[in-house]
Amino acid sequence: MPISGRYPAQALSRFAAALLEAAGAPPDNAALVAQALVDADIEGLASHGLLQLPMYLERIERGSVDPTAKGEIVVDAGARLTLDAGNGLGHVTAEHACEIAIARAAEHGVAVVAVRNAFHFGAAGRFARRIALAGKIGIVMANTRPMLPAPGGAEAVVGNNPLAIAVPAGGEPIVLDLAMSAGAMGKVRLAANKGEPIPEGWAQTAEGLPTRDAAEAIKGVLLPAAGAKGFGFAVMVDLLAGGLSAGGVGAEVQPLYGDLSRPYGSASLIMAIEIEGFRPLADYEAAAAGFADRIRQSKPVPGAAPIRLPGDRAAEARKRFDGSCALAAETLAALHRQAHRLGIAIPESLGG
Image (cartoon, rainbow, N blue to C red; front, side):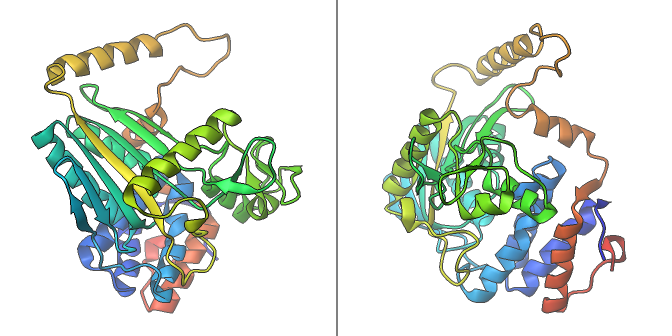
């Protein structure tokens, strides 16, 4: 039986890629998705890491995800484009959308790529950061199946709809990445897998009662972050991502872990803003870095942890990376089961 521990990240990436290739993904698509999932685990975002891979593989088997698709431009208006993802692997089509946005922003000063028929792409911040590393401001958002009630409601009517914004800062970008729920569904699923409670204020049961039981939260609804404010942001992400792409909005987006034979139907919006033209890029980066340093050096309350900016925790995890990656026993066991199903050898370093 696999145990929780630290495993070689390179072995995990190769193993995940082999599983995806065995399921029908071309090598470049498989490698991209595998690396993105392992990167999430390295950064401490287990809810967006290899935990998701067994579900991806099962969706490929059921036909709701096309592992070969990269996405096709179906509307091209220069700085405004629509990409039909064709139910491809989410990280692949989001990366393609980022490449388009970066190139068109360099040409037009700004680019907006609306994506429909999309699949789960993990952490939105990965793609906003990708754009910021190219010297542009990145804004990425996506919708999910309804998980949040309106204030005072007991019925899920809008998704937890993540939003990420990243700006260049002369080195590591400053990256805000948040879902509109008090806690991400991936973290709730992780708690459920471990049999652990979730924090108070994260969820309600299907009957509208507060709960710390992760399993009950999955059957019920998540609560918006900051109440009506989080709910309002979630509504607007749906109308921007789903509305502009002519893709799914609200309940048109399917449960990620529901009927695995039915396409997810998510939508996203990926924007790149060219800084040159407003002001020199180096000036902007220096201003952003100076502001960031001022915040990090601000006075903390007694006994508090060091002050961080959005994205600092993940950046620190990348700096500490020693070649190994923490993985829960439940996640590794699920990958072992998929390997047996697909006829893939399990590396000795991963418990094979």
